[in-house]
Amino acid sequence: MKNNADSEFRSEIVKNRRNFLKKLAVFAGSSGVLASMPWWSPLRAEPPGSSALDRVRLGIIGVGSRGRKLMLHLMETPGVEVAAVCDDYEPHYNRALDLTDGKAKAFKDYRKLLEMNDLDGVVIATPLFEHARMCIDSLDAGKHVFCEKSLAYDFAECANVVKAYRKSGKVFQIGYQRLYSIPFLKAKGYVDSGTIGKITQIRAYWHRNNDWRRSIPRPELEKKINWRLYRKYSCGLMTELASHHLQVVNWVLNAHPISVVGYGSINHWKDGRELYDSVNVVYKYPEGVNVIYDSMISNRRYGFEIQIMGSEGTIEGEKGKIYSEHPPTPPAIVQLINELERDILDSVPIGGPSWAPDLELDYKGKLLAPGWSGEETAIQLTAFAAAIRESRPIPGMMKHAYDGGVAALMGQFAMEQGREITWPQVEGLQI
Image 1 (cartoon, rainbow, N blue to C red):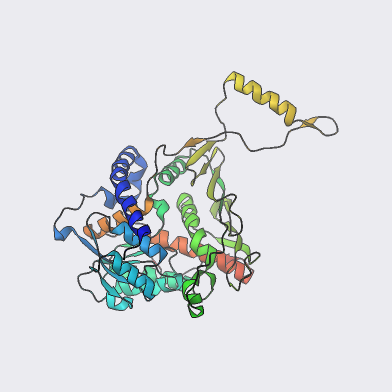
Image 2: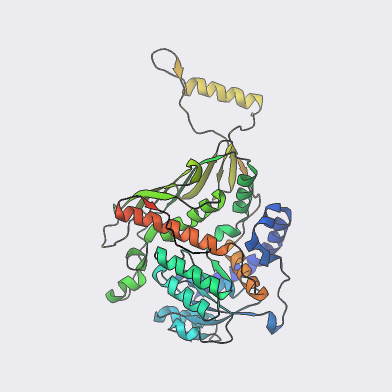
């Protein structure tokens, strides 16, 4: 029996996709910045026809919460067939097979799935500790690979995936949705053009309020289901959340971090977990730019954001807004009211001259991409399928995967080891 939530989600995808693809064409056509983003090039290819030769056959390895969503998107992506599913947890296995009406081949061992000769590529959405070996085995088997972030569990694994990719000549894509976000693409354009001046600092944060724990049917499944809480399987908040924003940092600065220091703690959810529920790290980048990142899962007041601050302005990527350091002058009557309010509220006598604190500028900014409400996951999966159809690897994608993955690991290791961690030097590695 099909899950009603899955059916509703899939219906929503179908309903939104028609308008979304039209809107994407308009935004892409009006935004010159896309021309400099090579991972968008597959989207400019001819749309798939009805021929079997146009069809991209994919297998999905790991069909839990994220894998299921990717699967539902792929089932509505033109020219894509979900030909195989794999999961070694019975409920996920059965649900995925049911979603395909039994048409896909189903496996509990991903290596058996890789033996399918008529499979073009795989989508990997498994726990972090499995990413590297599954990516490498898939590339070695001649399959194109889409892997959810973050790239791998340690520095050596990240480098080994790069080596396997270079040897394979296949398409590789990492699950960083912001590479396919029109507001973030516009933000990158503003940074590169100097609109917000010299970047001097970046702040990013991701705050939630939940224990990140999932219910388990039997005690022996605790670590299998709640793998994000245990160090053997995960690097916690840094690879699950911070990795997204660190990819954006590397992208807009055109650099990777030099080093990082930080502190992490379990200060709220004292339930036997091994990974921090609160992290605070500071990265050093070239030209004296520091990047401050924090994440917690005990307070959601501020949500998530990345603030790119320059001498002439600020960009808030998640809000999709840009703010000038020199906001336009308000109409005279509004200015008069503001001045009266400041005289009443802001001037505080301290031993003589009045003193007004440096409060936040009351300027609402402007939208980077007015009217945009796209589904970036849909775009990146469409681009992945199109790249496979063209049999052309996406330029720059592996560098985003490697630099973002390594940066996230650096933060985790700095907190665990209580020392500054520097960028790993790997001799002969070509990214």
